[in-house]
Length: 466
Image (cartoon, rainbow, N blue to C red; front, top):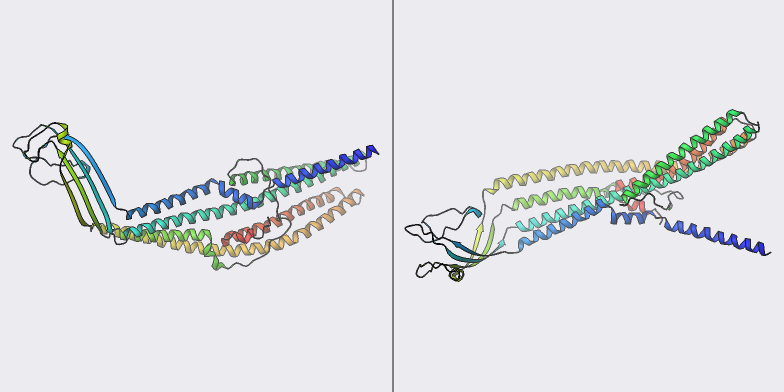
């Protein structure tokens, strides 16, 4: 009685351990929704698109700073001679040194110290819409960058979901080939035993070995395919792991149902919104370029002070530093300035027309993509309906093949049929079992492609149970 109780307890502990391990394994499986969120946070290409959006936001802020007045200040100390002659000169940028100085009968090589401090405020109070057009162009660029990110995210989620389904089907196909290998191995062992006992001819043993080798090759091929899709999924997740456990969810227990989707809603798809953003961006840039020809009316204010080693009262030269640093005079300036480069019209007009043609180009590309996507949506709907019908018939095919296999096995074991007939039924049941998984997977993948062409991933995700 003690032994039985001890034996019973050991069985209970073993059962609890198996259940615990099974629960832990199930808990470690990752579903599609978790992978979509994980990939969104880690995939490098998406992070690059996000950075581009942030960069565009900074460009908008930079464009708004055009409303801020320009304030420049400067200060300098010099040690130089001060010879000058009468006449005008043309300032040529930073290469020009101020020619101010006294007019002397002979060149005076005596150098003196000097100082100069200035502050200049220039504020474009009227710009005829140039600044607002520049801001709108920057906003259009940000909108385009955001549309680019959303389109890339959408395409990425489609690729990840499709890879998820391909990994699932490859895993189930590997299990199918593993079951087929086990059947072939059991068949080989049984055949060898019957051949050894003289109940079957020796050729049956060779034939059984060939069937086992064929099943082994199919299993290795399925294992290779599963590993390849696993690598692809890990790449989309931004990792380099060798394996990942994913949940089958309801992909092989339920079939998706059909849902009509109007082609009119296609214009809201991320890909078409991305194309539309290029049209809007080209038009916004053309307006900004056009308005850049307009004049600017500025409020100007300035103040400056000057120190020199030459006395402004007696004209005497003093070589000490203090005489040059101390200010002798100061000035201020207030005014309104109008600036308008009329000859810019020819360049700006051509740039404006060029951007208008760019917008026209993107409009034609948009219409071309719209036509293509409408056609692809119709094709995806057709493929989805056909895939549903195939998935509904696949279990019937498998049940019939399974029944035929069991009958052929019984007939072969009783000697009523030959080995080639039995091996053919083995191949048929293996193919039917694989077709069942493939048909279910194709139905879900067809729905995913329909969602991709419609530009609405919720058409797919709403039918996936977490």
